[in-house]
Image (tube, rainbow, N blue to C red; front, side, top):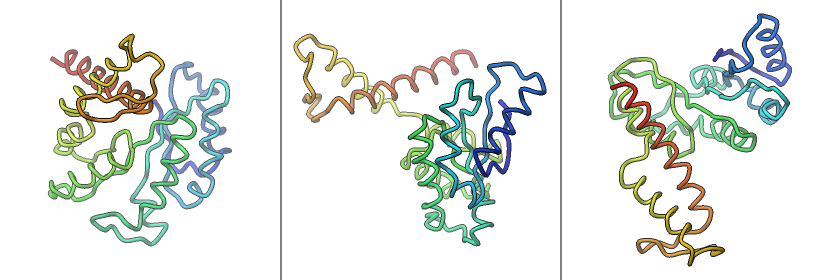
Length: 206
């Protein structure tokens, strides 16, 4: 992939994709876009809509939280309250148009507890992962953004329950004492897919 900074408009996406094509980039090479200015956030739906164009390379957004904070004149607070509106806008657009979206960096390398808290916040908001600035952040980030064993087991049980012949056509089931709907089964499929992909990567790494 090629990561391009300061994407502020749909026209910027077009120019980036044209530059890749003019340079002879292979068809499968992806375009990752940095979302890091107020202008980008004001144009966020138009930028996201480029994802649906034929042969679009754009697949991932990376939040440039340091630049956003600078441009907004916002403080870096532990709970990121000044940033939540910007992060939420980008998340909404990314989900509406099928883009992967990564949370921004955490600057205080020595603050392990603070880093873990921000990773958990990003995960809970819906980010797919996080950009990092130091090797020490890799393992805790992977752990927090990966579904744990209990979550994966519940997901597999939910999928299995909806596949039973006697549950065909049902919209709501009771699984291990929990009421689950079709939407929970769809979430479960994604969780299992992530867990399986992680397991495959770990097997290759070994």
